Each structure stands twice: as C-alpha cells, then as structure tokens.
Length: 494
Image (cartoon, rainbow, N blue to C red):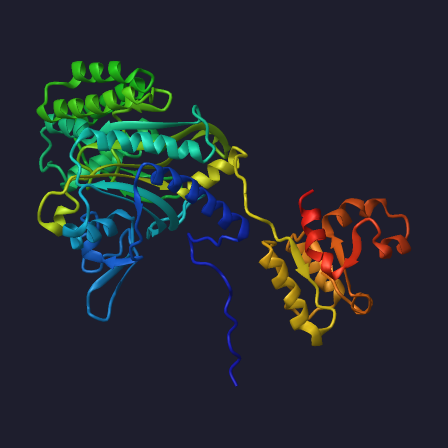
C-alpha cells in the first residue's frame, strides 16, 4: 500500500498570520482611525471581498486572463472575478448600484483586507489591511482639503506625533501639464505611456532620481535581477521631467504659498498646469484658515499616485523619521494616500460623479508604531482560569466561571484533560492573573482557593524550601465561596 504523503504546513508566499497581540493591535489601530472618520461625519460601509474583474478598474491589464496584479478566477457563470485590489472599486460599484437612494454627497469609511498578486518583500505582503474614507458627489475644494486635514488627524490619533509625519499634497494636473508640453507621441490622460510615466515618478521616494531616470528610459533591473520595462522616453524629455522633480524636492522645505508661486513662475505656461495651481491654492487657503500649517501639510509636486484613475489633487501620508535598515538609515516613508477620481464611478454609472478619498495601509502603520515604541494593547487580559479538579463536576466549575463573567470578569473554565500541574501551566501561558481551585478540601469547607499567578512569579526566587513553595502562602488565599467575586475584584483592582 502506497504511503500517504505528509502535507507540509506552510503559508503561501506573501501572506502572514496574526496572533492575539498582533491582531488586537490591528483592531485598535483601525478603531482609532475610524473614530476620527466618524467624528467628521463619515458613515461605515462593508462591500464584498470579491468583485467582477471588469468592475475593478481600468488599471487591470487587457488580457484573456486578468492575473497581473490581482488574484482572479473564472466563476461558474464563465465571468472572471477577482479578490479586491483596493476598497475604492467596490465603493464605485456600490454607488453606481444605489445612486438614487444615497445622500449627495455620500461620505463613507470602510476597512478590510485587500490583495495584490505581486512580488512580496520585507514588510511588503500580498494581503494587507486598509482603511479608506471617501466623499462621493462633491466637486469643490473643501472636500479635498477635508481629506488632508482628516488624514492628519487620523494619524495623530494613532499616537504618532506631529514632526514624525507629514501629509504631502499635489495635483495630477501639474505633471499632466508638464508632460503635455513635451509633445510625447501617444500621450494623453490615462494612456499607456502616460500611466507608465506616472508610475515611474511615483517611485521617486523609494528609488531616487537615478531609479526614476532608468524607468523613464529603457528600464531598470533591481537587486534581485527582476527587470521593469521603462517608458522609453527620449533623453530630452527625461531631463525636463527630472528637472521638475528636483525642484519639487526643494519645494518641500517651503511654505505652501511660496511653493505655489515658484511653480507658477517656473512652469506656468500650460493651461492644464495653471488649473492645477488654482485648485491647490484654493485647498491651501482652506487648510490654512483651519489651522493646519506646514508642520502637518505641505505642497509636494512630485506626488503623483500610481493608479490611473486619479484626475486632480492627490495626497500622500509619509512618516518622516529614520530607521535602521540593512542599507543604513532610511526614512520610513509612505503609509497611505489618496486623491480625486472624478471618472471612476462614471465607468459604471455612465455620468460623471466627482469623488475624492484617502486610504491608510494599516500593516505598515502598525510596523511604524512598533518601531517608535508607540504600540500598546489596551484590552482586558484574561483575569481568571477556573481549574477542573474533578471531571465529574465540570458543570459546577463552569457555573463558577459563568458567575464571574456575569460580574464583568474575563474568565474561562479549563476545557482540556490535563491534571492540576498542566492546568496551572496553561493558565500561565494564557497570561491569566488568577487561578480558582475547588478541590476536595474546598468542597468540604464550602470555600475556594484563589491563586495569584502574578504574585507567584514575583516571589518564586525568594522561596527557600519545597514546603514553603507548596504552601503558596504569598500567592494564594482560601476564602468562603460567597466571597469569591468580592475577593477577586479586590485583587484585580490593585
């Protein structure tokens, strides 16, 4: 008989498991951000994790099998479906389906897992958690300004202080205007060459000017040997774009007002470009009046955002502190972004629906908080494990645990099959504060023994002999059964 092959337990590449502490950190981080979104008047929404592939967006490749960048499969109705690439495409579909019944503007926030079928790397996963907020149906600068201000408030509410983060504001039309002046063959908003240029520039922070120069030209090979095809621009066009990016790097040190004036003086000969400056100026005035200075929000014209559906103002949230890496000290970088996308819903609705939104990458933000030692888990620890000393009386022990839970004390009754030593070891591993013991002696005297596991750890190095250890005089006490709740509450309050 052929021996059955043992299956090796392993995760797929680019995915991670989240255990109790990590998952609780993510939940608390989500809640702290969503609290800010709620304070701004946004309402929650949950859409499906799978969408039809043709609904997801125009950034999917035009292939028979849309498998580049997304996880896709053919459904039993012969239509391609995909795990959601982001939360925005599901929102666009929801708005198009329910347009007439929704308030205008419609303001929602949503959190959930998204999936990218791409190469994973250090701290870069193919499944990650995002928290979005979007305003659908508003065409004025206030909605864009509000996104920047809310972005800043949300990051601060996670515990990251002003000075360790910055919101970088720009406008896709700035670069559209500059590229328009270059008269590149085949270039138009949303064209393949235009998106290739935008995605190359979007990597400025990660690859620097030299990396962007390669991507604007023939292409770039990374350290692993993977090759990315370039936009194929002529050298003169590359030089002009790099010149603009260099001026953008310097502009981050300036006030918003001076930055916009300098941009207008240097590049303001194009109608598209001038429209961008007007929009940014109006946003900046609103932000300024609301009290958000350059310590929180700056103008950075190098921000473009790589996705093809952005049509106007764009925003990037960067963490500005440096951290130690294999390459030396490096800035932590982007933890999220967003922008205006006035044409995305129109793909499904048939009419233009102006929209703007932001998205926070929670996994990267969680890593940042851990690096800054700002990560804290504020959940109630397990307070009590009720030991099972007599298996025939399990229901009685469970009744004790239920009584404690009814009093708001986080408790569990041991459901395994181990003896007392194994049960105490289990309680230690669960980081429980107390163990409740009801054995023969306790039953006879109508009492319970409460063992303080934290005190037991603290005094263990002071115990001189085995008899003293067994007595447990410093770590446990015997009390009448009727005093159980009162005693436990007294111990937990200290």
